[in-house]
Image (cartoon, rainbow, N blue to C red; front, side):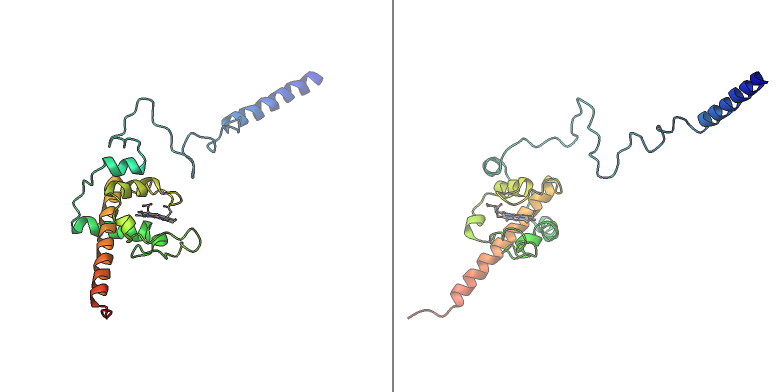
Length: 180
Ligand code: HEC
């Protein structure tokens, strides 16, 4: 009698084990644990020896960029229009739509300077490009969000804002009543 119970017990155990295996035991290796990339997770590293298809920018700070880089993008309407569009998205929040400061974030962060002042007009294009890419002393870099072409478009647009502001200044000065 006891041996019958024992064999029944063994048989029941086997049934449970078989059912468990059929449902993918051990359950710890289910589809939740998989090598796919999860939200907010860093992308997988490229395999060793990979080469970026669009080349890599040589490391240089913005002072060096100002000395070495030449603006390769013609400052025509196509470039400045795109630069304007991007400036409104990426820069105006701090620098204001005319680059004179006072964007909505300026009061919460550090108020940025008026970029139409002579000091910034005299900066070389490469320096402005380097500032957009890597940021300034306090300004955060925007290099991750903007391609090199887009950064040059913004530089070209910034130049049009600076030019317009200095023309306005000259006009104001010449129309102001002369002192006797
Ligand atoms: C989060 C706010 C913020 C954003 C966004 C921002 N800036 Fe700035 N920017 C600043 C502040 C603050 C300064 C002054 C302090 C510094 O130089 O870091 C500054 C300085 C600058 C300067 C002067 C650098 C110099 O010393 O000659 C330039 C040029 C400039 N920004 C351009 C841009 C452009 C173009 C964009 C958009 C691609 C942009 N900034 C986006 C806050 C910002």
